[in-house]
Structures are given as C-alpha cells and as structure tokens.
Image (cartoon, rainbow over all chains, first blue to last red; front, side, top):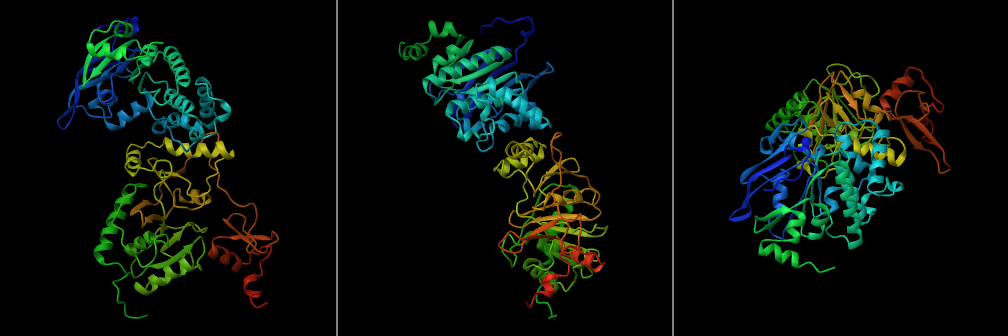
Amino acid sequence: MSEPVSTPDDDQPLLIADGLSKNYGRLAACRDVSFSLYPGEVLAIVGESGSGKSTLLQLLSAQLAPSAGRVSYRMRDGVLRDLASLGEAERRFLFRTDWGYVHQDPAQGLRMAVSAGANVGERLMAVGWNHYGRIRDTATTWLDRVEIDVGRIDDAPKTYSGGMRQRLQIARNLVTEPRLVFMDEPTGGLDVSVQARLLDLMRNLVSELDLAAIVVTHDLAVARLLSHRVMVMKGGRVIETGLTDQVLDDPREPYTQLLVSSILPP
Amino acid sequence: MNAPSYNFAYLDEQTKRMIRRAILKAIAIPGYQVPFASREMPMPYGWGTGGVQVTAAILGPDDILKVIDQGSDDTTNAISIRKFFGKTAGVATTTLTMEATVIQTRHRIPEAPLHEGQVLVYQVPIPEPLRFLEPRETETRRMHALAEYGLMHVKLYEDIARFGHIATSYAYPVKVNARYVMDPSPTPKFDNPKMDNCAALQLFGAGREKRIYAIPPYTTVVSLDFEDHPFKPYRFDAPCALCGAENSYLDEIVTDDKGGRMFVCSDTDYCEQRQAEGHRGRESAAPHKERAHV
C-alpha cells in the first residue's frame, strides 16, 4: 500500500482497517479490506451501486460489526484502540466529538424541526457546554464559515434548500473539531453548481482544519477534487488503490478504466 | 358503605404486588422510568390511570387520602378518584394537606410543606422528557442509560432563541440525584423547587405509557438551565384575590367578557386555610357563596 507524504507529527496512522469483511447471510458485501488512513488525509472510496462502499463506511465508523477483521483508531491520547473493544458509551462519545458523519440525506444527519443554531450547538451541549451566549456565538461563527446567512440562524433546516442543509450538516459535524469525518455521498442529489460550491467549501475546510476524511462517492469528479487517495471497489473487494491522480489518469484495472471512461468529457 | 365486591383498593393482590415491585425499583434508582404491566382501569387514559394504580398499590386501610386536580380538591377528576377509593378501599379521605398520608395529584404540588411519612402520587401523561426531540423509544432509553442529555438543552436553547427566555412553563425537565433527567409531569415550573430535598416520597405513575418512577425523600432535584439563563419559577404578579397570598401559585379566572379577571390560589385547600385564619384578599367575601342566588 502506498504511503502518503507525511509530516513528522503525522507519521502514525489515524485509522487502520485490517482484513475487514461483512457477510449478509451468503452475500459477502465487503471482503478482506485493509488500509491505513493518516491524519489530514482524504481517502475516496469509489465504485458503482452495490459494490460495498456504504457497508465499508459503516464498518469503519463502527455502526456495523464486521464478520471478520478489525478497525483500530488512534484516540486523542495517542493510543491505538480496536473499535470493537470500545464500550458503547465510548463509541458514542467518539462519534459526537472526534468524528463527524455527513449523510447523503441531510434529514438523517440534522434535526429538521429545531433551529439551525441548535443543530450546530447540539454537539457542544452534548459535551457539557452550558452557556447560551457562547453556544450561540460558536454556532454563528460556524454558519458563517459554511456560507450560510447568519440571519437564518433561528430558522429550522426544513426551510433550507438542499445545498444549505448539506452545508449546515457539515457545520454541525465540524463544530467539535473532529479529526476524522466520514462522508457518504455528500454531494448526492444536489445540482451541479451547488455541488461545485459545496466541494470547494469542503476542500477548504479539510485543509484548514487538517481533517482526515473518508468519502464514499460514485462521482469520480468528487474523488478527484477532494481526495488524496482513491480506493476502487467492486463486488465487495478493493480492486485498485493509489494516489487519486494516478488512479484516475492511469487506471490499471479494466473496471477502473471503464469507470473513468464513463465520465463525459468536459 | 356497601360490602366491597372488589378486592381492597380495586386491584387484585398479584397486580398490586407487581406494581409495588416496580415502585421499589423506582425508589432504588431515583428518576429512572421502570416499566410495569399497567392494567385497564375503569376510567379513560389521561384521567390518571397511572396515578390510580400506584395509589391502589400503596394504600392501606389506615391511610388518609387526598386527591387534587390542578391544585383543586373539588373538580370532577379529584372527586371521582376520591370516591373511587372511598368505595373500593373504604379509606378515610380529606382535603387537608397536613392530614393526608397519601396525596394523589394531577399537575400540582400542594403549597403547604409536605412532611415525612407522606406520599405524593403524580398522574403522568408522558413520562419521557426527550420524547418530542427524539421519537425513538429505543434511542431515548439508550440516552438515559448513557446519561447523554445534551438534547434536553437543545429544547431550552430553542426556547431562548425563539422567545428570549426559557419559555417552558410546565413539564420543566429536572435532573434527579445528579443522574437521570426526568419529566416532573406537567406541573408548573413554579413547583419544581418543591421537589428538591422534599421530605415526602414522590411517586409518578404513567398508565398509558406503562412507566413508574420516583423521587425518594430528601433527594436533590435540579431544574436544567443555562449559566446565562438560570432557572426561574414563574408566577402571576398578583396576590390571591381571595386570601391575599403573595407566594402561592395562581390560576387566572376570567370573570366577564370585558377583560375582567381575577387571580386565585390554585391550591384550594391552602387558600381556604388562609381564609379561615383571617387572611383576606381584594374580593375575599367568598363571592361564589354569597352571589350564588343573585
């Protein structure tokens, strides 16, 4: 597996997947996936529908228990821990502090009936913030950072457009300054210009905050714009992996060649 | 009284035993909602089926029962429950807070301080404080188990964002014994401070939702709030029109269609006691008695 360029502080992997497999009865949704993710690195998992990308993402984020293999994560104290050995309380704590999870459908990641400010503030309140003024100030800052009009802080996301909802979801996830963000088709269902704006925003945030991210997408353009490294999946297996430019410009596997060639030329 | 054709206090002994076990567990884990096999009662859900079952399970022949509905001893719900136990258990009933050993209440805590040996039984419509923010029961139970209560503050945040202050005025969430967040049933938040370090045992029964929870005597009960928006009990800014009380919870009564209104104690027993002691308010000549035949 190719090692990315790393600074001396970042030479320890943040997340290690080791022989991950998941079977649903006789169906093997995910077979023997292994890789390491380093701090600040963005990994794209691409492949067509049914290739096991979403299952893999759920395995990595400890929402599903693997049939075989394991996922280890380096906690903030520097200790590498097997996610399966974490208690539920620890796992959930990790999920709302050190991790983010951006759903394809913002309705799954947001509380649609409460205001945008409370959506962003929820994670802060969950870790014990108890000062309304400070919570609101932080929420305001984050709305501004994701280019949402601060005047709409008290509006519920159900009054927001699709692009705004997705940006709000990102703000809600990043407010606790996580080190790792999982994204499941973050641009799915958005029109092209909104996608472009969202991708631009995500790229800036990822580099500003030195975030590591695992992005599941079927859109190779998203992979090219956001990620440093790409994993191509087919039938539950990783069939090709490498630096993004390398994989997309010079695909080795026939399937990857097919994927790349299926993009319309600009 | 007729010879009872029911078991003492209506419920059969096995059912009472089951409820008592739930009550004991609830007392052992203050604020935790204990599931129990709630029975059909001869009254509709929402009329206090949970409270009635708890009362039936703890009532003994020597108990003196008081039932209040929104502080009042003489509304339909209070009278019918009092009669129900008078008939099925033959227990003495009273309207005096001091004298009662068991007080079943719908949404008020009596003004007179409760003492040791008393039991306050609440009728609870919705026991789950997180319900309207997180509809999944599986999820809310997990949140209780892991003490993840950030969501409760989201509700208070919403209040401040919308109204500029915490506008929740009843069913105001509390933290019991520094562990479980609990819905104190729809009592006005004016009553929340009375729950803290209370000498009496407080039991909560939700019949439709099949949950019992409890606050043992002398337990800390803290109303949730923000540092910069502290909890404030709410009270109409007026004395009681009948007894002149300045510190009791008031009902607003509309007296005509020209904007006339009067504020009176919601706790009728407290108000009557004060009037008997000679306290008088602005309209204190017990108007409902003298004007009855006008």
